[in-house]
Length: 126
Image 1 (cartoon, one colour):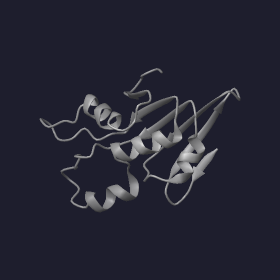
Image 2: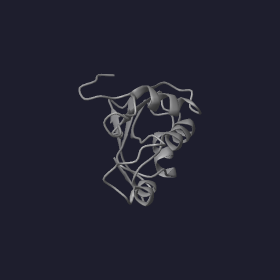
Image 3: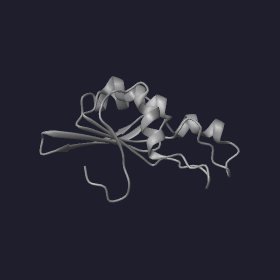
Image 4: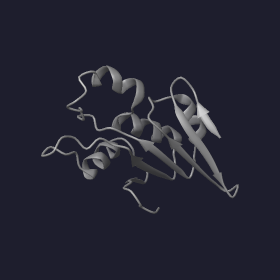
């Protein structure tokens, strides 16, 4: 079931009528996503580190709040929605030599979110 609103684009999948998976694309934080994911089994969500700044996008400070979620915002969303598993994906790694590590992403989210959280990489299985 697609979840489209001014704040969020997401897809809610029901598996075998028993499990629920919410996949959120590029989005700003919003209440519809929290409601759709409330106590879902898995929330898969894009995220950007607080310090991430693409070198080729001068308008990032204006663009990011409309279309992307920071680690602190995602931690707040997850705290309200309480998924059994939070999976971080589609994240910016930063410029060569100053890459933002998976550990940093996890650390930033875990500052205020205590649930289970992992960073996804292509072909991972959870």
